[in-house]
Image 1 (cartoon, rainbow, N blue to C red):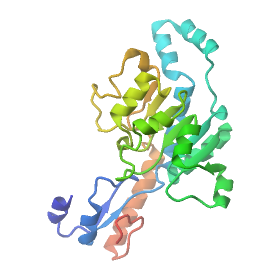
Image 2 (image 1 turned 60 degrees about the horizontal axis):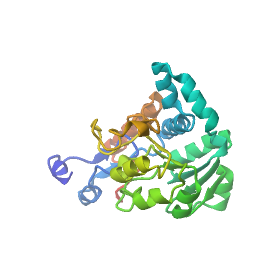
Image 3 (image 1 turned 135 degrees about the horizontal axis):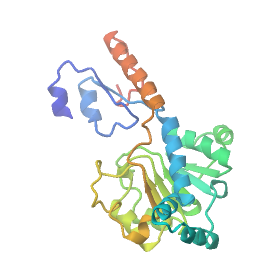
Length: 272
């Protein structure tokens, strides 16, 4: 915050360990000549793997399958699967909201499964890049209405905060799922809770929930028993890998050295 910046008159750099920088007052830092930098791409591979993990866990019925083993009722789950078969990722159209480092890594992994991948972003990529990455651009309303899986990979801004609201969810297909490995602030918690209970969408896989830490009585955690089989959580573990931390800290300490040398750091996000 600006108060904390003023308490440190020699501050020259605010270095975010991850990609997000929404907890920093960017304009206040710019006015004081303080660089704010983030770490784009450092955790892309880790979060992309987590995204695929959550997609598979939900489409392949991991939660009810595991619970049935504890309860000794696995045959019942198998019976339900026979009457309502599980889906393969290769049979799904996946919509990526945002197309930065992480979304691109997710698209690459999804191609290996044979999934059709669409994306939406504020700035459409060139036709050459779309062809190279095997993705198709769709306006957001079309993407939400046409895709079997919607995966969030955009930053939190005034435009995107709680973008997944009742209208967004109502456009989604009844058998579709929402995956959030971006930020919990992108989702209207009460709207998603209602959509899950009402069956507006099939399920949700959540690595991030606002707020964090998430209390046990949170509207997306304290769900009716009949809904819990259709929700998967992973406690914001997506970017927590040894490789991601190594890449992030290399950038962080390199930027600190740039500052000590009187040089401009990399990945400046506040316009200095």
